[in-house]
Length: 360
Image (cartoon, rainbow, N blue to C red):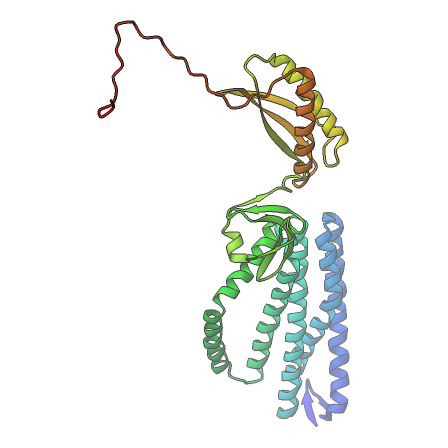
């Protein structure tokens, strides 16, 4: 028996604990109701989606946290046997820490998911960022719990620090590729299915973007494996950005005596026919030409067509050149051979040619 506020209370834990739990639950329930009502009014005024998710999270975790906090306050105020008090206090602290870790982890994930709607780079690496966030909170929470249990963390942290340094040195290239892979997934300069060309000349479709390397399937059906840290340092031409359609440029030259207006009209007619009949052409595109050079044996110009994607440009060029050569032949338009005209000037009668030394 002990006296509390002038009242003798039996110290049997089996009688005291239910009263403590009931009192703490009542106080926690009342505080929870008040806080949730105030929070609901704030949410109704702001009408933000993130506020609604935080409200639902608090509905799940606020009452247990308040209950544990209330039990800690009441248990410290109630005279209990030292061993019972110590065990109860430690159990409640660990329970509160576990609830706090889960609550903070869920809250951090909610913040990350709200950022995903605003920032595409965060959305692209959602899963690894969420995994790292969970690991970080769990690791910190575990260390705090171990410290409360009286386990010294200094030897553990020292060992982990030395081990982490050794692992980082041993896996330097692997970690570099890993972070480069994260950058590629976040920034997305390339994606699966894109046709790209590296500055070293390799080109093909992106077949797989892994954490260590990226695989590019070339047109001959060979696979190029590029380490991610090399890829992020390379200049890349992406033929699928900003869109798949691309201009197809064909260089043509005609004779100097050609009617350039007629050449332009005939060439555009052939180009339109090709774009409308050849698979891979863009029928809605209006092709055009641009004269640009007085060459040695021809007037050169560029024909601009359009293909649906990079690999279609081969067939479009192929058919265009065949049809253009046949049409020029029918129209009498000459595509000249490379020629050079040499003018010889007649010398005066008194001129005597000199011959090289040693000639007869």
